[in-house]
Every structure is written in C-alpha cells, then in structure tokens.
Length: 452
Length: 96
Image (cartoon, rainbow over all chains, first blue to last red; front, side, top):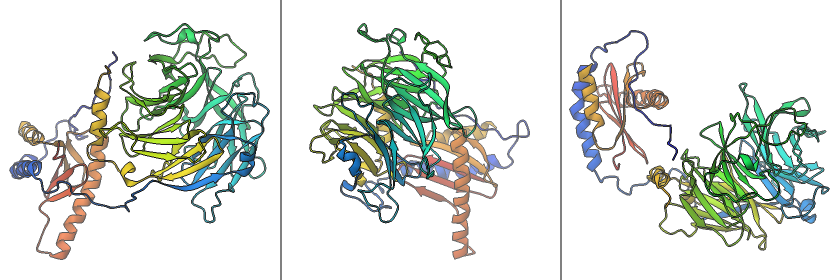
C-alpha cells in the first residue's frame, strides 16, 4: 500500500535577523492574556449560543432551473452532437464543439465550434456569437486558462488546433497539421498545462492511438515538445488484467490533470483501464518508432482496478488531493483513492452509459454525472441515501448528455452538452452549491476508509 | 523561551484550537503553529481587521479602547487579544 507523503506539520516560525531573538515583553504579554483566553476558549467550546444559526449573505435559490438552452441550428440540422464544452477563464463565454460520438467513419464530416457570451446583452440562445468552421469533427475543447480568446481543440482526424476568437480573418492560430508527430486517431482530450518557462502554456492532447502529446505554440504551428505512449505491455499490473487482444496501444478516452500535483495525471482507456501517470516518467515507451521527432516515454505508474468498458470521464476532487471519481459505460460512478487500486465507493447512477462526471467546485461531497439517457444526476455523499440529490433532464428526448462543465467564476452554473446538439446552462440551488458545516471533514473520513 | 512555549502549548491544548499566531505591532508573525502561507495570510488580514475595529471603538468614544476581538464564521472562530506590542490570535473550531 502506498503512503501519503504529504504531512501537515506544525512548526515554529523564527524571526529573521538575530539568531535567538528575545521578544521583550512577550512573556509578560502572554502571562497577562493566558487565563482570559483559555477561559474564553473553554466557554466557546461548550456554548450552544450559535447552534443552528445561519446567515444568508447571498440570495437563496431554492430550485434548480435551466437558464439557457443554446443551439446552433446549422449543426443540429446536420445531426451533430455536442462532444465537448469549455468555459472561458472569465466565466462569461461558453464554447462547444460539434462532432459525433457514435460509430462510423465521420472523418469527412464538416463541423464547427460555437461560442456564446452569456454576459452580453441581447444573448440569442439560437445564435452563437462566434462560429468557427472546422473541416473535421471536433472531439475535445479547452479554453486557455488565462487568455479568454484562445481555445484548443482536438479533431477526429488526430489534429490539434488552437483558435483565437479575436482574429476575424482566420481564427486558426496554430495547428499540428498532419505531420508525423500528430495523432493518427481521434483526439478525445485536450488541456492546457504549464510549461517550463514562466507564463508558458503547452497544449496537451490525448487520443485513441494511445498517445499523450505536449505541444508548444510556435508561429502558426504546434510543435511537439514531449510525448508519451501507453502500451499494454508497460501497464503496471496491480490487479488481474486480462491479456490484451488486438492492438497493444491503450486508447485514451479520458484524461484528468491533478490540481494538487502538477506532475501527475490520470488516464482512462477504451478497455476500461484507469492509470495514474507521471509527466516526469523516464522509461521509454515500447512503441515502435513512427517518425516522431521526440522520444516517447511510458507514463503509467499505477493501475486502478479496471472497469468493464471504456472510461469516459475522470475528475480529481478539488477538495482532497487523494480522491477522484471515474465513470464509464458500466453505468457506475466510482470514487477512488489514489493510494489503492480498488474503489472506495461504487454508485449505480444509471442503467445506461455514463459520459461525464464532475465534482462540484464548492461542495466537497457533491458530484454530477451525465447519463446516456439525457439526464444529469447530482449526488451528495453526505446524505444517508445513495439516491440522487437532484436530477436534471436535458430534454433531449432520451438522447445522451455527453459533457458537463461548471462555470469557473459563477460556480452555481453548470453547462451540459448533449447529443441533440444543444447546450443547457443550469442554475443550481443554494442547497447544492453552499458548502455545509464539516463537509471537508466528512470527505476526509471517506478518503481514509479502506475498501472492503 | 521555555515559558512562552509552555503557554502556547496550554492554549493549543484547549478543545478545538486549530492554530495560534502571535504577531508584533507591525503585524509581522513572530510565533505560529500553522504553516507558513496560512500564517502570513492570517497575520496580514487580521492585523488590518484589528486596527479597523480599534479605530471604530475609539471614534465612537475616544475614552474607550478595544480589549478583545472575536470573528465568528461558518467554519470557525478567530479570537484576538490585542496589546501595545503584540497580538495573540487563536483560531478555534468550537464544534471539533
């Protein structure tokens, strides 16, 4: 069993300058106040004066409601699905990528990326503020963490593109093109990660070819900076894994970056694997070289117990460094600790596939899951019952809800992208967004439980 | 000084005490039981709050002066015993 290296040690904080400074009068001061403060602390610990006392600083929102239903008619007419959504760093703009999630060769399908500015007056939910035409289906999208006009996208063809929505002529700022370094298979995940230099951001892309690649923006091109290849033979065997049939590549269907440790990331695969990986891994990947300009490394360090189907979404808890949740086609949401292979908790969310999972940014015990039946189920782990705390019907006539993202600034807004080409913006109730008393402690308790 | 450490230990052992910080007259922390970044954050912000509270009391009545300050929040309570040269800051979660 792994041990958690992070320990919270209290220590004394010495003053700079003199070696052993004597604080004149400090002892006397403490002598004067000690009795009084000890009495007050004891009284406070016993007091019931404030029991059940709550203050409402914000307007209380009793219900969950759908604020906007955003649609791009051209994309809907073509039957395109919303494959990925992303909020700008300011929280004002929501971007969505159109593509296809079902089987078939959609490589020649034209699609687009649309953005709506929700804070702008005269918002027309049926008319995006920006429409970027893309020659191929877009499978993943990510706004730059500090530049509100830059969006990275991963395409069905394996290309990775960065668009600048401020550019009027040609929004493409940089792209990988079809170089030998590029992915050959759909890119299901893109993200921005900090680079070596201050302020530098790299684009991370991961796809079903089993490659996780890091790109720098250089002129009009995305240049490969580092790369990782996930190969079945190099996956750590912590639990019984069936001998792989078919391709030895581990196709990546989901990826999560750790908000706690910039070196670690999680990968979910087509075959149901969930792997803990490291950017600083040194071992070379056992993948045959394919003309890449950078030596690919094997990043996987730890295997969690595998799922019975593709892992569609992973998310690290924003409140606990060792917790993450994963969902897949088995309809279960699994709560994992990074320290052990078996899950802490397995929740049956739906009889259908689950496509997305996101922890609440404000309530440590709450997460949302998007189902193949077009529902978003919200769970509160603090409740006794394991039934959802709220169910949000995406009104897609049973078509799947594919992706969800919480607004980074207005944390009570949740955007959901659906198979019918719509993006619904939900306003969550105060109950689902306001952190309760002792919630972080309850989460800590959960994290420390050992799986049976 | 052993006496100072003993006193801090006694205060720390009270029920629910999460941290103790002693700041000097300039608001610079000189003793703490918390990590560096929390200490620096608390010290700066609380020093400002104490000075504001003190001026509030003295503006209302120049013959009066601040003797103790308590800030109660959803998650915990901060108690501050001010003095000419030092402030004692204790953070307590009374329901712990």
